[in-house]
Image (tube, one colour):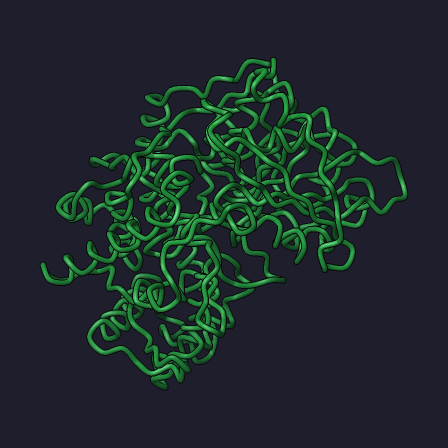
Length: 530
């Protein structure tokens, strides 16, 4: 499941579809331990990300000496540029990747503090698109006054050599694939779907697919930092962007400036453990939604006396009906609402409590009026499918990065079946689908080059790690774990719902982060906001 941040001002969906997206979370089983116990054990077993040498290798010097040629890019107030980075850092002469950048220059007043690099997560979310649509105009005015707000699409994403896997009709078929197979035939169809997706990615970018890891993207950010003329990297990363930012700090602790990691991931966990804990996170979010829903008149999941368990049973029963008989949506391409599309539609709304009213309406229409249009709309926003049937490369890049960063969560359908009880216990509503979604990297054409590792970043400046207590995509325990690993971390907690916390309505959170970005004063470790 991917973990891209989607700000409520732009859309409701977020990082990773049940099919492609679960690649991010790939590995380590529960084996009867509680999640917290297993997490600790996994963290203790993980190695530590080692920093790179401080000196720049001679072969990389030309990349570090680049200066971006900023130009107008058709978006008022923003400039765009490109920079080259080596395809393979082990062989810098083997070819280049061209990265897309954008910036909104500091507006003043006040002394300019340099560049503030922003990443919204994913992996696969367009940082350029995010900054142009939100951060460059929606971040606090004081921050925008003092910083050039900058974004770079990571390699393989959006404007930076994007990975492509399937065309629109192919993705439509992929997103409709049943991810809760009932028999051998349906299991075979799911495996075939994963294989077609993987083969498409491999055919499109056979060389690039070996070099889209988070470590390589973090090394790219250091070249961007140098090209921007900054001695240290100032950075706000959300969701998967916290993993990218923490990786940067681990590789270049002496160049880490003011880093804010919001909606933190735990880099010490293997894939299956990540997926299992995320399933639990979605259950936590669903429970909060269900409690709110049943208190309201007309909730399709039940009345005031309905508990979370019964509400979940009602939703699962609806999904099972869709599995047998999809319902109409009025879609121009004739798509009906399947179980898989409806599940993604519900998951999309879990990322932001501001989407709960829309979800209630969508479920009411689907469950009581046999109209799947609104749930399909939520699903399409999650997958970044437009009205013409075209998809962004979000899902393609998501799988490409995730399958390279960690070994597969599962190697076979039999392994998934053995793990189903643990996933269903973690999330009675979503667990089965999330377990099967974790199988996709088993068929990836490129072997993983990364592994689960602790990140300590010894010697780095204070790093602010932000966690939300009922975050569906990056469970709060991950923020606690990352803060426990980073030697200079300050944990900042938001007691609330939704994915990430900065810029989502908490004056306490925003003021603490703004004080750090503007004055270099980090919050007290353990500070809590609501």
